[in-house]
Image (cartoon, rainbow, N blue to C red; front, side):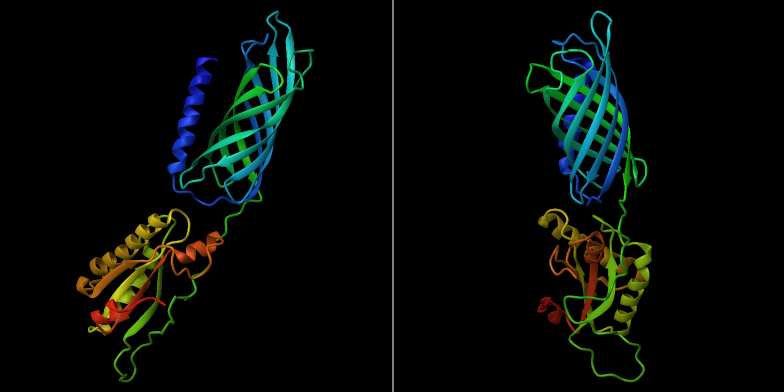
Length: 329
């Protein structure tokens, strides 16, 4: 095995292993087409020299980490006596992608195939098992630069070949769903806050304020677009100085449950911090709590639904005792 292939194999393994620690983003289903060019290294026990390879792959990415792909490779080489030999390799592979929030997607791949040589060569049209992986570097929403490395094992003869390619992958029919407008839906009944026109009775023990603060995926940053709702919360507390408020954080169902519980607390704390630092709310009147994946407003069955569940809500109480005795419905 040449040094370049040893280094490629080690690097691919490290990157693929480290990808499992990345917080995964959901994939989008669609077809893929990948023209490629690369390098073929036949086994040392073959009477063949290393040479170039051209390929074309057609696949389908499911709406989960799995994909399937058919690949055609044309391998150009020559025998030790200088005679040229041409080979056509066909593969049907399964791919497992480690999707994440960065522009680099590692993947593992394996499948079966066969190679046809234009001369009577040992291993012609034998069944072959291939395994390996690679990296996809996103250039745009539908285009990626792709590096791929495979070990090809002849199941009928003692030959282990290698192929490394680089290509440009195009995705078709894959459209990301736009976030839907956030409806006012809460675990507890919503009581609309209206301007005070006439003297009203004392406020209820518990009031759910109709202002959802939404967050990006895996983020606790409060965007400027949410500041109008923060102002409304601050105005309500200013108009009701006897009340205290609880900021409740939530997360979608992507990722470990314990991680999402911690993330929901961070979201609640971030909203409380903005209310204190940017809108002048007394910190002693605010409490925060995180419920993680609990109490989703809609089922976590799509990207748009998960966006609605990444939120904080605000509930005001007539006293701190009332807040401490409250449990969400």
